[in-house]
Length: 462
Image (tube, rainbow, N blue to C red; front, side, top):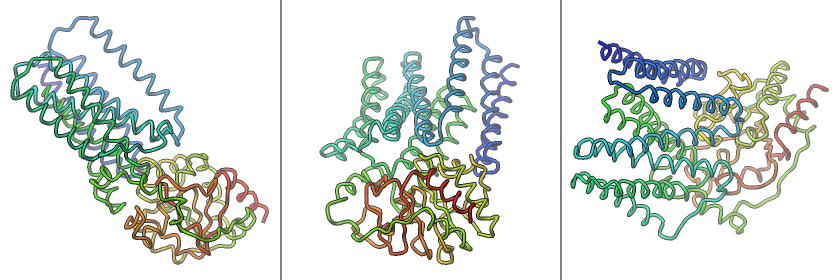
C-alpha cells in the first residue's frame, strides 16, 4: 500500500515540475513557477523517506536529514547573499553539483549492479555525462569568476578532444560488453570523463559562455534522467528529462539568436581568435566623441522616445535600481522608455531580464530583439549601458569579423546614441566595436551607477 501512495506522490511532484516549468516561461509567473516546482521536489523527498518500503537503519536517516539540513542552509545563505553580477557563476556552480551527484551515484551503484549489463550501461552513461557536466561547469565557473580570464587553446585541440570523446565511448562500451567487474577501470573512466569536461570548456571564449551554461545544464538533466531509469523512479526521470530537454532547447535557441551552429560554438573557441586581432590595425578606425553628463541629460530630457540597452556593465555596477529611477523620471516628463533585450546579453540566459526585474521594471517594458529592432529608426536616443558585442554593427558590415551574421540590436539606426562604458576596452568577445566610432555616438565614460545617478540629478534640476 505504501508503494501506491509513493507513486501518487511522485505523480503529483511530476505534475508540479511540468507546471512550474510552464510558469517559468513568463517573467510575471516565474517566481510562482519556481516555488511550485520546489514544493513538488520537497514532496517527493519527504514521500521517499517516509514511505520507503525497505528497512533502513536509524543512522541512515540521521545522515540523510543532516545532509539535507546542511545543504539547505548553505543553499539558502548563498542564494540570499549572491549579487546579481555573480548569478551566472552560481548557476554554473549549482549545475556542477548536480552533475557531481549523478556521477557519484553511478560510482556507488556500479558495485551493487555488477553482472547486469543493462544496468551497468545506464550507470556508465550517467557517470560519464555527470562527470563532464561537473568538471565543465567548474571551468565555466572559473571563467565567469575571472579566475580563468583567458580561453586556453592547446595544439590540435579538436583532434585531441574528438579522440578523447571516441575513446570514452569505446571504453564504456567495452566495459558493458565484457561485463567487467574491475572497479579500478570504472574509476579510470570517471577520471577520463572529468578530463574531457575540462578540455571541452576551457578553450571556449567568453561570448559563448551563456550557450555553454545551457548545454551543461542539459547534460546534468540527462545524467539525472539516467538515474531515474536505474532506480525506476518516475519523478527523478521526469525531472531529468525536463531539465535536459529545456536546456537543449534553450541552447539551440541561443545558437539561433547568434546565427551560429552549435558545433561552431563547441569547436570554434569564439572570441579567442578575434581577440588576437584587436589592436593589430585591422579593427575599426576613427575618432571617438565623448559626451558630458549634462549633454546626456539634455538629450534624454527633451526626447520623445528613449530605448535603454542593458549589458553586463550594468550588472557589474549594480545600476539596475538607478536606471529604473531614471526611466520613471523620464516617463513622468512624457518620454516613452523601453528596454531592448538581446537573447545573449549578460553572461547567462535571461541575465538582463532577472536583473531588471529585481528593480521592479515593468515586464512589458522589456522588449525582445526581434520586436524592438524596427523601433530604433523612430527612437530619439538609445542609451547603451555596458553592452558591447550585442550592439556591434560589425555583425552586419564586416565579413571577416567572428561575429559576422550574428543578429544584433540595431542601435545604429537611432537618431542619437549614448554609450556608457568604463573605458574603450573591448567586450567579452574581445573585438572592437564599430558603434563607438559612429558619428551619432557619444561615449559617456565612467561607472554605470555613478554616471546614471549624475544624469538623473541633472534632469531633476531642469
